[in-house]
Length: 364
Ligand SMILES: *Cc1c(COP(=O)(O)O)cnc(C)c1O
Image (cartoon, rainbow, N blue to C red; front, side, top):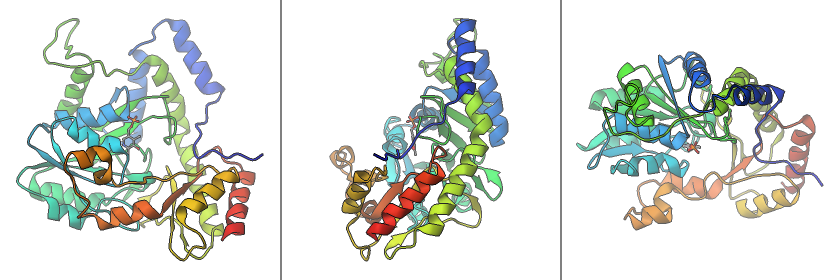
């Protein structure tokens, strides 16, 4: 019985040896290895500072909080993303305002962002969804014109590039190292920023506002990463480009061989390097079966697949309870009914790829 998972981290002897070393050292919590991971990550992204935290959600919360987002403020974001993006805004007591997305890139649409700017808007939180960078140039211009902060949710785009530069170095970048992401530490997160002030505020927030040994200058939390996680991160970062190259190759193979009426393969803008966190098809009405039946049949044949995401965030029960209505983002609503993610992760073999194409060929 064939079974191809939708995502799978690649962990080798390198990670195991690095973790073993930390375990044997006795220095398990935040320490030298965390610092080493942060330095390597900052250099890789091309940001002056990188501050690690315990997960990507906390990276977003820390960025928003330290940019001064608070109760009464609005933050414009995309409704077509993982829930953590919007929830991080709610956690500040602020209100997410949803701008619609582009039907090709699935990313926030700058024209609609402009429509949503009000006097209460404090920041724009864009997501480089599925590994395809959003229109950073246009969003940056809107931020400059309206004096707004820019936060990049890079949780799905480690190593992706926009106009030759890696994402996470334009605004405040927020990364996740959950096991399904392009690189992992088990759980983990990182904030990247050119601002020393924001970086220092994040360091204080993650460690109870400790600015010297047991000298607490602000109200913080325990949001720390451990040396154990960082040891995995250092090894994963070394292989990130290789992982991403394999994702790109896998995506290109699928693009080339999935030629069926009613199946639309992922779009890629000329300005970007897409790192295919997910490989997302659009299943149109002229495909021989509905998206949901297609997904079930693929799963029966052992091809892992998933819907990212079945609901735009404003249709989630939580947001309905908060009084959000369904109007205003028709593209996001339509995409939620059409998208289907296929495996594209670097652990796929040539046989896996051939099998996926063959199974879909039989159904199309
Ligand atoms: C994974 C993810 C997050 C949250 O990261 P965690 O490490 O799971 O907290 C935030 N935003 C997006 C777009 C994500 O995919």
